[in-house]
Length: 499
Image 1: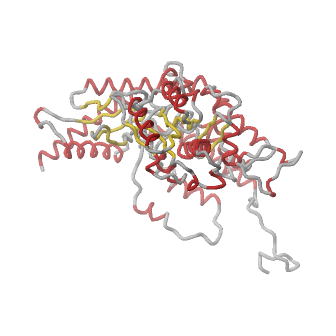
Image 2: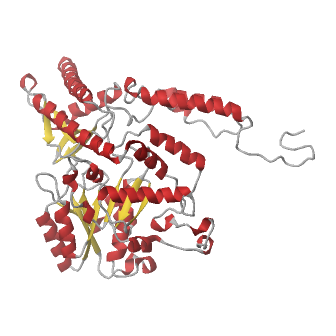
Image 3: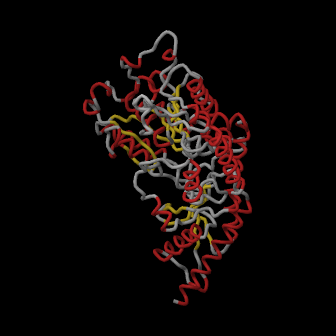
């Protein structure tokens, strides 16, 4: 008889639950043991390594049609996935601005998946915890309790949330009903020439277009030029545009530069602009005792984007958008169809969290943040932020002391931009040759599993970029980095001389 039918010829009912819970329990214990060892021994592994051809080919296999034992499935994960990470949990990963995760957060992600709640809303514990974590984020930045917020996928979406509220608030019409084409005077948003590319995406997604975002020149410290900003606002008003929003940087991606947030807050108030702060890099410096003064003024923003998966080291992904005017926030996104109406009690009596963003279905992102904050306390996270900033200063001093290396710009917070620039016997290298040398150093550091750096261009100068956003980094890692850069420069130079 077909196994899919019972003795009465009826189709047998199935489930995804295991047939033998004891076997799954044994495997689960093994997985947890392996996970703890994976984090414990992270320093002993390469930061990154290239995947062999057979591993890449493994990911082209067709859709599985029949079942496999879970032990075999896990074996494939162990062999094909775990040895080839991006590397951002490693203490010498400084490539892009990412957090380095933490064990409590990882356990939180697991438990959130097991608990399985949808955070679109409703009266249940996960929804209340989501609100509590948002409230904690408000407290970190000095926002009022009356403000609102929402947990989202990351910084790009958090910025889009804030800028959408700004557009709708400053448009002068009901944009939700009539659309951007009905706006009488085209809106203008302002940010420095160092703002993240997600702001361009936001302008495009909001129907305003890239030209609605004016990039204002920066000063010697790569902060927005206040005089140039005032001039641009006046020029746009005279030309018939409606200045709507100024975007302040609490840490730029390229160099970590922080705009004068207090000055921008005052300017925005005087000019009747929405003041949005992109704090995905540095908003959380507000909890760092030695450096909080650098982001003074962030509490006066109308909206802020921040990333708990960066300096709170939550496992990916979790961002947060805060909005001072809770009603403006809700009015920008709330829709109440008949199938999502509230009830006086029961499951639907809770707050509908989807009223504050674009997602109706929302994952349980809060638990991994909540558990890590409860385990360590916010004061420890503040000290770790100060530690990373001090490490950037230490690296800058090492670079300044090494004749082959030079800083391209002094670090503001935890991002160090430098390059190798050999002189003397090899001649003073410039232009494409200098870029090629530094790019090759970066690639060899990655390929040899030593460290992960990125590169960028600052004021027209190509450079290597070290973003120290890692609670596992130690000063000896930075000593090693400088030694290895010098070694590789000599190795590359020797190979070039003999070719």
